[in-house]
Image 1 (cartoon, rainbow, N blue to C red):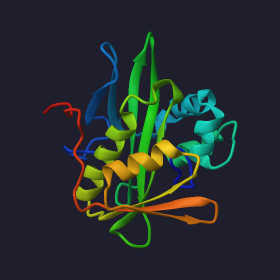
Image 2 (image 1 turned 90 degrees about the vertical axis):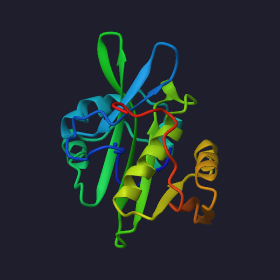
Image 3 (image 1 turned 30 degrees about the horizontal axis):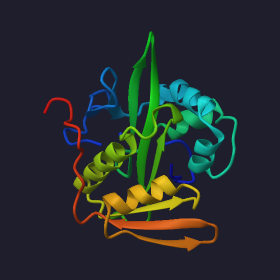
Image 4 (image 1 turned 60 degrees about the vertical axis):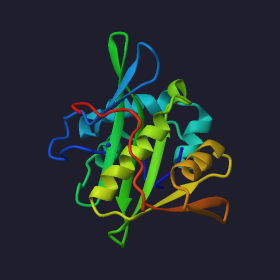
Length: 201
């Protein structure tokens, strides 16, 4: 949905100590729940599958170019997170006898420690189910707890859904064109809380 211009794109109302802990969940229909945790390097195969099966539009909105995939070594490197400056959440869903990663969001601090660039991606199979909203609210909560006070996003103009979501969640956000891309800055003055109740609460 948005790009951090590095690669594919997990929040913690609770402790950030363990990557394995489930930090939230969101029900997308009567029988299906997506659970959220921090990404791990061994998620590379699941994320590679998500990229392979995504539509060209979703790939374009995420990477700003059409790609067939990300080399495994590079992907594993991108999934090794320096928690002092970034966070990455993935949504995990059971699909029959297999597990899928169906969405993700990340922030990366830049030169200023109180500003972070964000990226959000939701697979075509589960779009328009509230996952983008849940991801952004949870990522915002996590970032705010870690001292981030402003999000920055780069969004293609064709990604109307993402631009509207940012307007809805961050009323004080500003959008303007830089070249052919929309730059969005969103102060985290009021920290959106997840609509779905996190696990364990």
